[in-house]
Image (cartoon, rainbow, N blue to C red; front, side, top):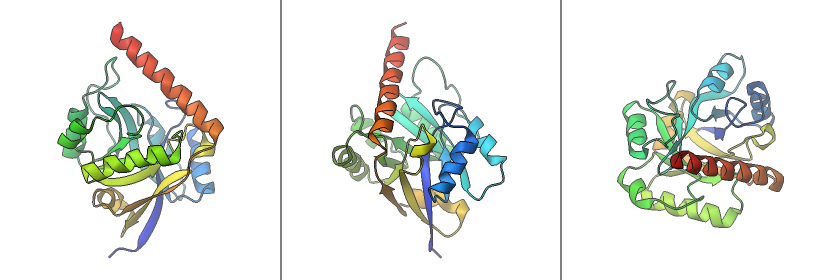
Length: 227
């Protein structure tokens, strides 16, 4: 029986990767914003999640991490272990990661697909479980959310929202309302499309900082491939 609506931010960073807030700061901010839960999705690590799990708070804290692949960034939700062969100079294989997450019962979300080139062919052949339609760090709402909706529609998978917060102040700017019967069915509810993205873009100052960090990471990635 459905009826419980949870506000979840599926895309949050901490000091364990490229965020500026401690895990405690992140949890306090999430509660202050009125969220029911969040996924801590630091790059290539679960350390932030395990620290958050050790605290006694009222939030649903989902295991998660963000992986850079050769066809976009993937948020992996619901698994308490990392995939093999990550963190090297070269991006991970998109198809291998999606299949690994599916085999292990996790949730795969294609993060901010509206940024950069659309790799629709590969995404169609090996579909993620959901698309991050609304990312609070997008430069412009209508253009980028429109592109995200296009990807979600073409692939026939759910569209979700996430703040992509690198500062606690941005947590919950965008989030996903998940309709579930129990908290432990969040992942299944997303896969079944019982979701709705809500929220808005973060402040221009925050979006500028995130954009600069993203550009820097792309340059570093390009340089590593050349070396």
